[in-house]
Length: 156
Image 1 (cartoon, rainbow, N blue to C red):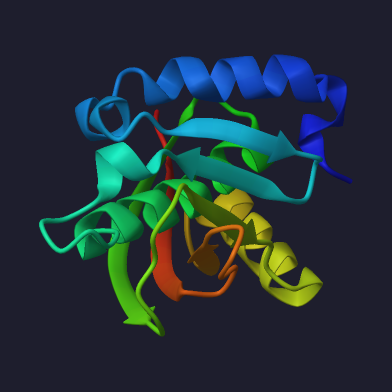
Image 2: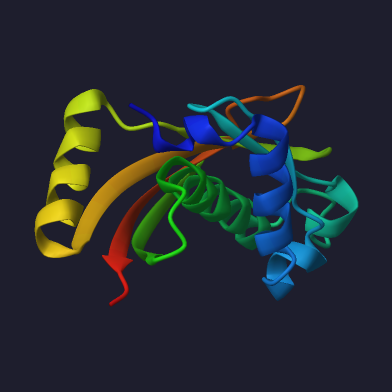
């Protein structure tokens, strides 16, 4: 069962966008929630805020958007203000240069991984989960990917 089912998608999007305003880099990149449908989160960033001096999307902006897509997916899925979610490690791959507005889609974990982190969180008040985001744009939906390990900690 998805714990977020009790909150509408519109309410969830507003809540996540409010949290993102508290992250200065998310503000600078003008990151917005494009879609949340209980299992899929898509974030966007306009090209003008993410480009480098070569006219391509800056790798750090791509990584930030991917990191926040996965983090946001966990935040929305868990829907629990008593949890801290932090990134522990991340690996990015850049397949081709990106121009234009960026989109990052967090990929939900498989059911076994989801059950494992939920069991660990219930048993130990902390868990780890690996999540992947695909980052691209309308012309090139798979320009980059980010694989991040996130740690979830229940505050006491």
